Length: 201
Image 1: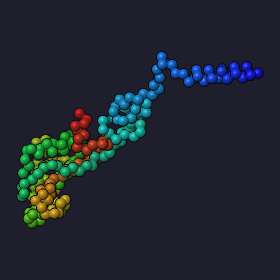
Image 2: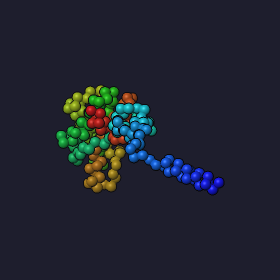
Image 3: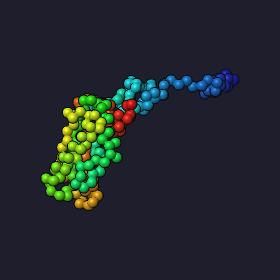
Image 4: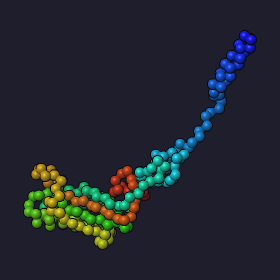
């Protein structure tokens, strides 16, 4: 009887030892495809929407979301005091708007002009309108955007962003803003809309 029990224990120990042994000659087979071919952060094993635009916001299955075009962007254009002249060094800022409008032909843009509160309201109202018009003129004449898609409006100093009265405040208050709109939808990107044209070439 003791011999039988001893034999049984030896057999069980040997069986456990065999089951716990992993052969180094047989590599583990990868069950799931962990590649991310369209670089959207979702592995191929879970991917349902291949080919999403790089930078798109996606759900857990790699499907991108879309949104209507309705974006505001302050253009980095510095105006001298009491001037609506746009130095050519700032044309690249306007070109970003033009490129977006060329890429999406249904878009329209409203250019807002703003001033510091130096001088009369009426003078600054005309000046802010002229600054906005200067931008739309460049969009039309330099970058070929149709006039029917362009609107300019001046706000004088109604919408100051810095009311401290310093020279720096006057500089930042002399600005133009582009608001681009359309019923057309675009991929909802993680970066700013004004880089869309650079990312989809």
